[in-house]
Image 1 (cartoon, rainbow, N blue to C red):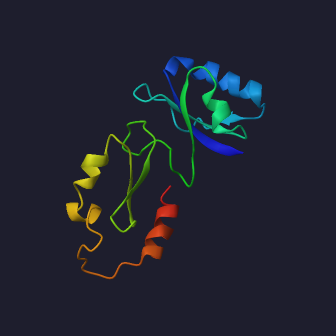
Image 2: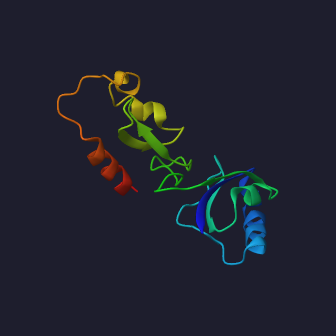
Image 3: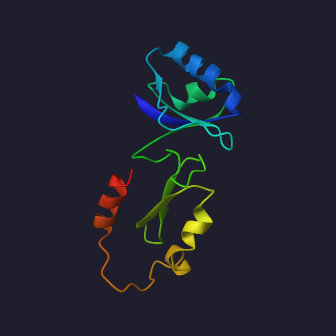
Length: 137
């Protein structure tokens, strides 16, 4: 079974979409720890269905598999799915969403996102950053 972040056309279609998923595969369930937002109506569902099956349901805009915490609602409170913000070397910086990306990036030096040879005051171990990233959510 996979967990999906499912974007809906509106919050009003939530129950119809959940019923359609359950009709296709009984035993699928919603992760209701994350409340649906009217800004970006998204639900999190665990099911063995493929994203193609889910996207064929009326009221579904998109279905994206969630890996290692990605896609859960952002901690900024927007209700939008989060994703990793990484520097130009692929080192994890923060979990963000479209709503808080600019504000979060402003806390860092701009060149770390564009110049892989930016200067650092200490040695950075990318493996250590990856381990922290995996535990972040």
